[in-house]
Amino acid sequence: MSVFTWGDNSNGQLGDGSTGSRSRPSEVDVPSPVRQLEAGSGHLLAVLEDGSAVSWGRNIFGQTSTGGTDNRDRPAPVIAVPGPISSVSLGGGHTLFLLADGTVWAAGAGFFGCLGDSAHRISPVPVQVEGLPGRATQVAAGGGHSLALLEDGSVWTWGRDDYGQLGDAGAVKPGHAVQEHMGKTYPVRFVPARVEGLPEVATLAAGGGQSLALLPDGGVLAWGFNDCGQLGDGTTTHRAAPAKIDALSGVRSLAGGYHHTLALLLDGTVRGFGLNDRGQLGNGRTENSALPVETELPTGAVAVAAVGGGSDAEPGDAGHSVALLDDGTVWAWGCNDNGELGDGTTESRSVPVQVPGLSGVRGIAVGGEVPQLRENPGGGYTTVLV
Image (tube, rainbow, N blue to C red):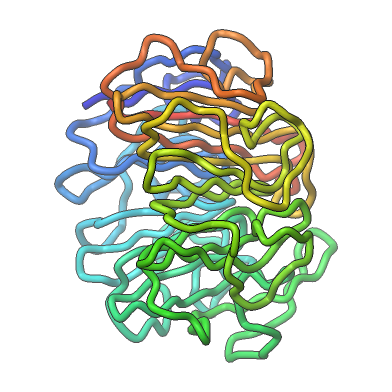
């Protein structure tokens, strides 16, 4: 198995020992075999078959869990995780680790409570998420919030809650607080609480400020930030409680960017909704859509990934999307300022283009930075597992 990266490299996230961006895929020296490859807001992580992991890229909060807070421009071993890793999810400045024993651990920026421990600190060493009442089967990291799906089908959330992304429906639950960060105040919850009123959930996804739940019947529930219509309900109204996306059915998987969302359907087609100023929805247009619109992809998509579109609070002038087809090819669309579409140009695309030179791809992930967390944020980047 091989890992390839391209796009922005301002924090070494392309893993080649440099900080120069690239508009074409290049191989990264990652131990093999890789089970899971994920990207966050400036960092990447590869879980290996033996349950260990390597990580690289932006590390100012210790989110790579490789020791210290210096950026990593090459893959380095993840340390201090107390057991084999089952899966991971990477957020705005934090990383969630789901271990084989069903416990959840987190590293990185904890000032919004997204590490799920009452200390709400920056931690370059993983800390256990407090208070989950059972084994977790999936984790999802958003821009400043976190979600866990337990084996009983219940969903638990913690972290930032300024747009209702925790799904508390206005209730004040234990661990709730008001946190100051960079001159602003945010409602947060430092420890997990259950999202009430949900039916059994199959899988979760999170964007910058939106939370998404895929149901066993292919329906979708969404809540949280909705300034550009990324909840897909036809409005731009934020929602503090889960609501069904009536215009979606037969969904296979979901991917959340900061201001747009992608839904992969069982028939291999893709729908997008939300911010579209750089063509992130892939429908040949640049107008936002608060309802799902079909992406102009060849048929046979088997995975989708989305990122960016500004910060998790303010949209604009960034964000891209990627799809993996059943023939092993990769297609990309949206913002391309840093070569994140991988087609050798920096021309943004409102219709998907094939990434040349790649075949037999098994997995995709995309990342992009959160501008409000640094003065000179980087842009989007893409990684694939072949």
